[in-house]
Each structure stands twice: as structure tokens, then as C-alpha cells.
Length: 361
Ligand code: KG4
Ligand code: ZN
Image (tube, rainbow, N blue to C red; front, side, top):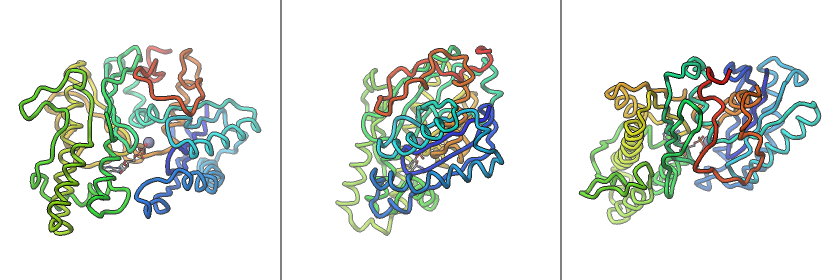
């Protein structure tokens, strides 16, 4: 089954052709970053207009690169939520029109689940072995920061999520405070390599440090507003630090954020007895985070599955791939069937169709 995946939830217009959930025939991404950089963040109306311009060429290129005629598509999958509504509408309207003209099924995909699936596209064998479950997913992007427990029955639960900023959002805003370009995450990652991560001691929120036990209800939750405020006070009270010590500031800020992500993810692994930890979403590209989590997993003898960088940031292969697990018809609870772009991410994710593959026949 060949599925055309379409992604337009934020500032990437993407299309991919994926055969049977795991064989990526093409994955085309048109990024609008340069258009939004001057505003220091994504402007929804501008994003929608750019998607309108890009969607046809991106889909046409994805079909051409895969060498597949649109008449040979079996289905279309489109990110339906969560995301910027004006941006989502472009992909959804386009996908509905194309599906209607070709007379093929269309399914709306949850972008957050798509990010988790990004770690498994190239690893079908992991899904086929139920001994890998339960597993924990650390989902870190510009819009989400959450720890998800995925047991062998696929009934995934969000153990914790951010109470304020997402990790990527905090990095992007921190970069702005330091006068660095958008998006800040990759810039901070690169700059940190020249800085000292111990130069400034930024707070590790909700970790129970400073002699205080963290409230049990926030054990797996995150908060990044405090670390951001701490950076703000540091640079406003000591203007001489910029640009002179920008690399030290970036490295110390990054260290604080990645420390908390690693600590909480590993706590979730211990708590749940997970066999595998997967790392996904745009911030999963971060070299400091990948190293920290990998090392922590090695120490604990837990398998580590980082999504490949090309499937960490927004892409349509994760959408077209995930869709196959719903479309092959073994999951009557398909979340994909709920096609609402305004629906919130529920605390319980429901039955995940890809966990684990083997027991679903
Ligand atoms: O998953 P994604 O492409 O879009 C959302 O769904 O949000 O993630 C984008 C986020 C941005 O905040 C960006 O700064 C961050 O991922 N990011 C990184 C790195 N590459 C992208 N953050 C830290 N280190 C990186 N190397
Ligand atoms: Zn995303």
C-alpha cells in the first residue's frame, strides 16, 4: 500500500510517499524558516500563505522522486492536529481535494504521534518484537515536550508534559534573548560546542533539587519558564556578558534544559520498567541531549532509539508511515478516524496502532 503523507502544521510544507509504513520512497520538505526568521518565530498567516505556494510543487516533486503516478496512490494521510490552524487548513484542504479527485481514502493524523513514529520508520523489527515493550518516548519539539509510556497493549499514556514552554520553544526564546537567530535550537547546539556548560548554574525546574521534593503530581512534568527567566535576569543585570560570553551562556542554558529532559526520561524508564527509550521531535536533533540520553541508557542497560535527524524535525514520512498502521485495518479504535483540527492532545492517547506490530496480526 502506497500512502501519500502531507504535513503543513507549522513552517514546513512536506510530502512523502511511504510503502507499507516503513519504506520511504520519497520525502520532500520545503522549509519557510527564512521567511519567519525576521519575526523571531512562526507567523501563522504567513505560514499559511507559504504553504499555499509550496504545496503543489512539493507533492509533485514527492511523486516524481518516488516514480509513482498519483493514480497509483492507495491513500492520503494528512496532519490534522495539533498545529497552527491556518497552516493545517492548507494541507487538509489540498489532501481532501486530491483524495476526492482520485477516489481514495484520506485519514487525519496526529502530529505528536507522527513524531513518535519517526523513531520507528526504519525499525519495523523493533515493533515486531513485543519484548521491547513497554517503552518510553521522550517527545521534544517546538510545540511539545512530553514523556509517553507505550505498553505492549498499545494503550499509551502521557506520564508528564510541560506546564509552560516546550523545550524547543524555550531554546528558540533563549536564543532571541541572547541576540541569536531563529530557530535558536540548532544555533545554541552549535554555539555550545565552543562554550563551558558549567559557566552559569541555571535552575533545573521540577527536579526536586534545592532540598525540596518535587510534588508527586509533577514528577514527570517539565517547566522551562524559570530557566528562561533566569537567563533573562542574567543578561539584563550583566549586559557585559553579551556578546562576550554568549557561547558560555548558550552552553549553560542548553545543559540545564537537557539535564532535566534526561533526568525525567530516565526516571520514567525506572518507574515503568521500560525496555527501550525512544527520543523524537525536533529537539531530538540536539547533540548534547542525544549524548546524555544515550549514556544514561547505556548505564541502565536500556535500549536507546533516537529518531534519525531527518525524521526528528517536521516531515511527511512520519505521517504517511504512521497512516499505514491505521489503514491496514487492524485497529478499530483508530484515532486517525477523528478528523478534527481543533482537538486537544488528550492525557490518554488511546490505542496506538503500531505497538507492537506482531500482536496485531
Ligand atoms: O519537530 P519540529 O520540527 O517542529 C515542531 O513540531 O515543533 O521542532 C522544531 C524545534 C525548534 O524549536 C528548533 O529550535 C528545535 O526543534 N531544534 C533543535 C535542534 N534542531 C531543531 N533544538 C535543539 N538542538 C537542535 N539541534
Ligand atoms: Zn513537529
